[in-house]
Length: 146
Image (cartoon, rainbow, N blue to C red; front, side, top):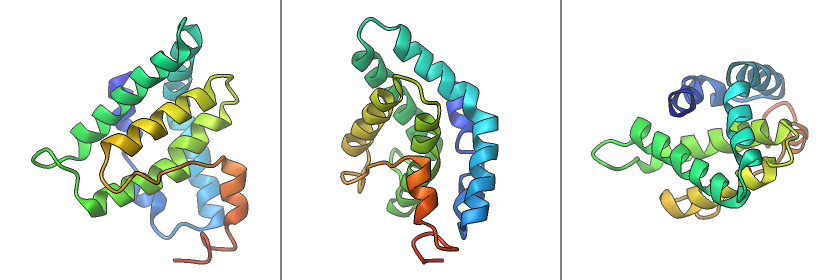
């Protein structure tokens, strides 16, 4: 599962660069096709656990470990890179988890959010929204920016 978690961030920069409504829709579809199985596996692991919250926290820790390993230089992720990762999490990872409509989706999303807030610098206010909320927030461009 960890190897596939690393692949989630492969196209992070191209997927968030100049994000507009049509591009977001296209990228999210592609993202879910490429990584849906990884999210499904994470959620099934949580669903099977007798203590779902503890298992979700375990997966959240593993996910954060993968991000640190992939993006840290000399043990730290730069502030600029952390902002990029946080945006990617908000626009793609959390909505993709919630779009599975799994009974455990909110448990896993909450665990990842909470791990993120404590582990990563400049992430204490990180939160998430579902895909429809984000999609509706676009005019032609995300929040009228870019």
